[in-house]
Length: 281
Image (cartoon, rainbow, N blue to C red; front, side):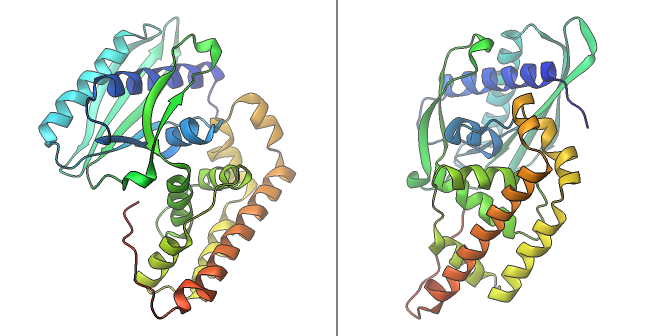
């Protein structure tokens, strides 16, 4: 998969404008929180672009209100970005717990360059306040956009959600390796009590947990990284992440995951007084 730098830039600008509109118009703090790839960019200063804007919203807000507001935010952002034209907004999923909008358009003057992104809002729950941080995201200077203040998953929450994703049987996202590697390098610790709670609540033995890690990380080959990760990196980062560097990255993440699991079973899970912690991320 090849994505031009122009497409990455214009999609990124549109995402920033959508989030700017959202957070300028949301009056009550803590009701809307950015998660996923854009949270990594805002909070961890990740260089990885993302196709989706993922948010969680206070479930007390009625579905019809979210539908009306989000569609209005998207339309407002599109008006502020004349470079993306001939846009079509669709609503592929609209349920009580998950609402998704897909935006498709073309770059003005280059009709063969399409810009596609999704906005997905989850009404399951809002993380505890300790897992939310207010952060000022500063767009790249060449975008000529003002900084925006967003509420995002904290660094600890991002590490926790990424670690749990790597332990998941259903998620197969090689970008999680890149994200966890970045979080390790900037010194983010994982909440081992919550990881231990997840393992205990799901009756996962140490051997099974380690097996999951080895199998999943073994499937995250450099060939997959070329197709699924590298196209979402800026050119300088793409060049840096050659096969040797990727192997070092993957080995670092495996070592960190194994150490975390070992610590969980040596400490928290062997403590009879341990009481499970709710997993909400």
